[in-house]
Image 1 (tube, rainbow, N blue to C red):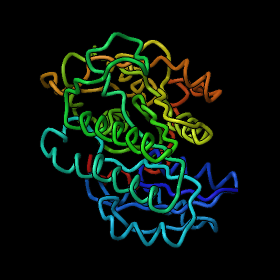
Image 2: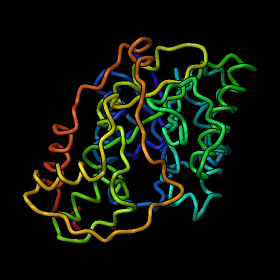
Image 3: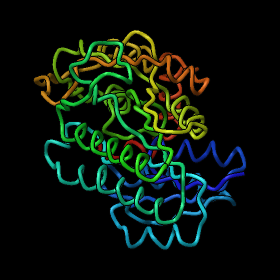
Image 4: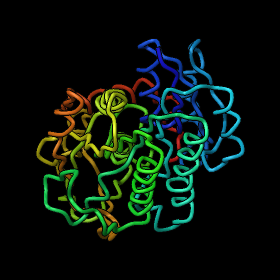
Length: 323
């Protein structure tokens, strides 16, 4: 059994990944700064599912705080660092680009430097499909991604190339996972699926940017967590897409599916298309299949039903979250 450091452990993807690692018998040290980018009550809900587990330890640390991370590495021998802490979201990165660079780039550098100092040889990091803006679909890992159209995407690119530098210089095995529109129960309130469920149910107008024909390669959170864990077995420097791998689904189609599940019609408040958004995403996942033996298992209809079921089961407190 291994010991892993998981950053951003109270986050949507990291919490589910940690659960799976603990279920497999591994030991996890989780760190998170519990910032208020979105309602902290949701982070606390996820964290509460983990803190009862005997092989889980939590420390409230920001990955920007090198001085606080160093003692953690000094007293624990980690088999790998799974860096899932990030400032996420394209639109907010235009409002406050500084925090994106600080967390996504400087935070990644802090972890890599501590790995070098303390002899940790496996690094795994979450990146984003946002890097592929303007490229031909389906998106392959070998496409040039040198023209990011948002500070969020630019900060992820910076983290990827820093990871390559530390692989080249210090032989740290580094796997970059580019996630494609992850959704699922207990997801961030600013994510489309979460907002749409709540807004349709309450009769609140959906803030729809553009005409709704923009499309995404939706990927269920459990599939992402499985792929993340599988990627711990890779070596060298690899960039791997984890996505649904199917034809992209239009936002209007997503809304229609949720209308059926909720038994209610959506009301719309239409907004201009946001220039920082990517129009379509579609992952080529053949590399993930070849290297990881991975393929998504949960289709969109099944995944959305699980989201609605979770929302209804937790509606007594979820209704008060800030969306």
